[in-house]
Image (cartoon, rainbow, N blue to C red; front, top):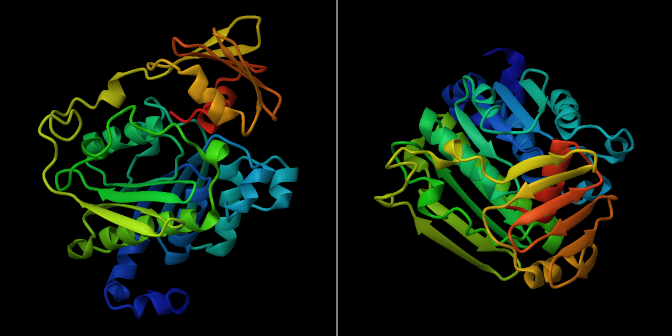
Length: 339
């Protein structure tokens, strides 16, 4: 290790569980961060400063003013330039540590794009904001044998765990598909400290794994509410015998098409067909806090501040009017609907 690296990481190497050997290990690792928003920017900041050798970050969205309250790598100039988050983050991270390879990729994470994004990766970090993508990451990680550092934050609540194929249960053993609350940061809000705490837990467990200190891993799914002042650890014991991912190896997220997207020709509209039905009253209550909502017995019409409109139907159909861009439609859907 050269003099410059020794000086940069001196305080970290004085921490005995890492030391010089652990630092050398970090410099040889490749990690993938999916989502460079609130969680992702904190994850990337810690990992770059820690000296992880190659950090690949992927996100489909652009920096907005509302991001600045909690997304630590962005500033007002990024908003003015409408920079993609992956591009803005890459610039900041390279300025922080030029010895680390930082790859900023502007892309949508799907069952088709994810395999290439995971090439040569030692650990995948979850910086996403919806369970559909999380289950996709979980299933792909278990199929490829790559650990998955899960994290989620909304309101003042957080949840995090490190799932290791062959050694721990997977995300599906704890959370079934469709069990998400449907709450997002855009509908119920979020405070910045809970984001920092969740991402820091993810990084700590990730560092333990990357330096080879697996005996120190927490081995729990940790959930907490920093406003309500409570915390709970659910131990990772035996996986569910019928888990379709880590036991039956069916990997349902890699097989299903999920919520189906269709562009309605000539109507500047994208239709998303959910698997679950929609309770119009429930969604009216959720969305009226952040948008103008009109409810009829047959549908829910939602005028968004961005200019687009949502139309929700009881059978699970959602129209995103005002765009034919699939990536834009997915972004709006994740922002306001979640799963």
